Image (cartoon, rainbow over all chains, first blue to last red; front, side):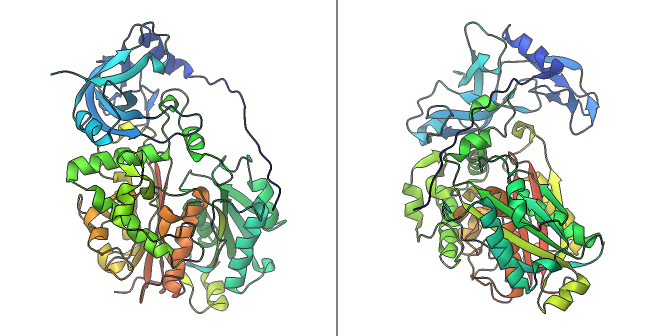
Length: 151
Length: 387
């Protein structure tokens, strides 16, 4: 039997969101979601970024989008992985009203025990609305999850 | 650009753990086998290109360690583009030769995903810390969201996806280097636990340790060295948007279609179904082989799921896909793309362990990032496409 040596990385980092995205996080404190409009292709990009990667131009026109939209796709995770959320949890891409791109987010408000039943309630095209933290702190996690809107 | 060919391929056995060897020892095993396969020595090699995806191995810049087995004192560089790394490394080594700067260049990729007790948290660190990392997204969930859309848009079924897994597992039984060797049926796939819905355990790749080396040579050298080199007809690569949510339609892989069209134009291919005999695609999840076959023109949009089910992609079918057992059975992530090229080259040399009868043109593919990068290479037993 060969020698096995256990190792673990615990290396702290402090990341900058940059001046541009900080504006988005400030707006979250008021439960508002901001995107940016590309002056060239006119797409409203959410999450916002300082330049349009397709057109190579700066994006400085800020646009408020709704905290409601439709599910573009979803998956429910049932496996447990070190450091990742406790299963089951649903993650999807939501296209918010007023945005031209989808945003990665948690989905909730649905029983996830049986994946097929849950997928029926979280079908592509289902309308959903954000559920916010009571006291937003200006972090992406202020949006707890999106849940289906009762029609 | 001048013509170049693959003249040697060397692989280690891929396993969850290769406790018998260290990082450079695995690199040495693959390089030695490739040199032996080509019938040349280290003295004949002009330069090395090394690929790996940090930090699966738990060693940052493992190129430092592994370079000791990759040509002491010779020109050396490292390539890294996520899961695409292996094939991007192959492209870089090919360009070293095709540019005329070097005559014989080794591409080598080593990865120890198995030493990483849990790969998904590492994949999650590849996601930005500002907007998306909190979601816990890794490779499985991004493949699963492709599957959800494909199923709803085109009616692709769980059974059809399971057939891809059955086919790959059957193929891997014939590959001495493959990691997972287990005969399974559709029911086994369907009854395996759901990992990220709708994908089940047997629809997901393993974590593998191992190394692969592929040697490229100029036309003149290739002809001196062996009678049956695998000539490079073309290569192509592409980068797509960073955010997965920017893609207009996840049921299709647009960027791969574009990269494929570029490749076919360079090689003079009009109909990939007729002109390409075998494909080694980067499909760590069943749904991805389906999307890739559609994007690369082997099936119409929404029709890719029928190919495994109807036997078309099995080794005796019209479009054999992943006869090596593919990524679904062996995934040393940053090395995997180069394994695709190695296996494609062996097919056109007529030396593959699960040989496709009469294969003359073979396609190798890799993707990486969160569905972001693609790389493609086309190899042939002839210098030009023959029709």
